Length: 153
Length: 370
Image (tube, rainbow over all chains, first blue to last red):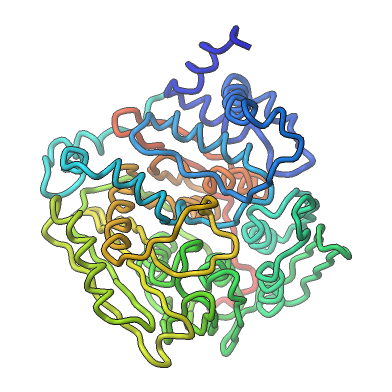
């Protein structure tokens, strides 16, 4: 399994739009399409499956009876490359079991999430890094950001 | 007939089926669960659909694990009411409801009773302050779209009441929302039900403590409901909305209520209790959403993608942050039901995704031409 690891990792984290599209549309939502759709999703779909295998396979293998929990999959953490984060979301969407909680809300704030949020936004530097997204920041930097229209394939 | 598996995206499948007129069949609904089959809130949603449409056929097997749905004509109309079970909040029902109401024969006016604010679904405050303005903007509706919160209700007792009015449209306009803009102000509501009004002020303090480092224009309203207006159970929470210079609305919320039956929370994770913590969590979630980027927050990605896909046969383009699992599933369902495939481009500099599509040009056939 080590053979394709580097290739899978690079496929997962490379910001490539084509693969992202393949990852989103790789697995069909209807049961007719089945899991076969994922295989012709190319490198993107394969990478998505690979990552979910790595996550799930490690400790669930020897457990015959595992607790089924309804989880809609956590939202992709911010600050990563968009393709990687969206790829994680796509993998979560296909890997999450079919009976997850049906909600649009990304996260419910409990004590664990509050601690995670404090870790992320607790220090002033992290908050300051968002300065250019607010009107109190640098307008030129925001204009440069808004000018981006995506990388063409 | 489209076939699906599992209870995921149940509302969306029913709503898309009704809009597209294509019958669906869902199998394996919680077959491996301790209590298999449909839940009470899903049955309640089916009853709500029967109230709104004419001639729909719902067939459920004995164990409730598979369902066949043949959609009818969307009628809607005034003077309707619906009791939502306490297992899910009113937000769960509002999301598909407002989408169907746009393509109804008559304008919708409905009263919903149940839990108004919880930590699982978007609360009625987010719906009123973010979802409806987004619909007004993307669907080109000027008036007659409003949500009035008559009473608040927290879990487990519920007892809240909201009234929704929504007009019917003939067709949706093309959506072009690419400009994120910069956050110019933050508004919010700190609500409390059947507890001391001081809790609302303490949540405001918690939220301002985080956000005032970046922006002075932060104003959080307090709404302390007591007596009959406070429903049947105590609870409190905060909703924050960031407005940008391009008119985009980004929301985040946190609340302290009790007794979620199917929470997204991991086992052993305690709910938030201290009001300052609730306010701070809401503010930090808002920073999360702002840092993700895009013209809407994570909770509204699916709705905006749906509106774009149902629009006219023109190019629609949207800028969204990293897609949530719900948005990815929405994209897949839009392809299944309407044949709309989005083109996805990633913008590495801003860490956002630009999605463009040609809408399916859905027309409201039942509305009389005026």
